[in-house]
Image (cartoon, rainbow, N blue to C red; front, side, top):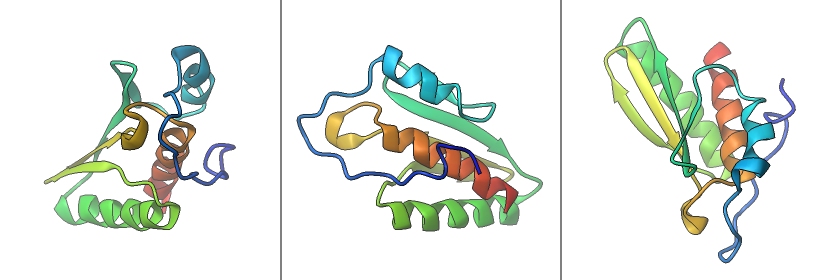
Length: 111
């Protein structure tokens, strides 16, 4: 279990600024391969699978984690692939919770 994945997502209050690149870079460096920060605004990763059923099972695992954490990603599900996009809507940018959920998603891949 990574340091990030051992944390829990925290509810975001409005009026809190999004993380700056200086703040999120050390968090980003803790994520597994394949995550990208897009436009200093959101995290994105593409996962490949052998078939639709495996991809769907992964979405269901990450969805259950997201519901527990109260922090919900955007999913794209297709045959053999899943894309996850994360950002904190309330602040229109990145927060610690985005990096926590990204780490938890990577761990769900191993389940």
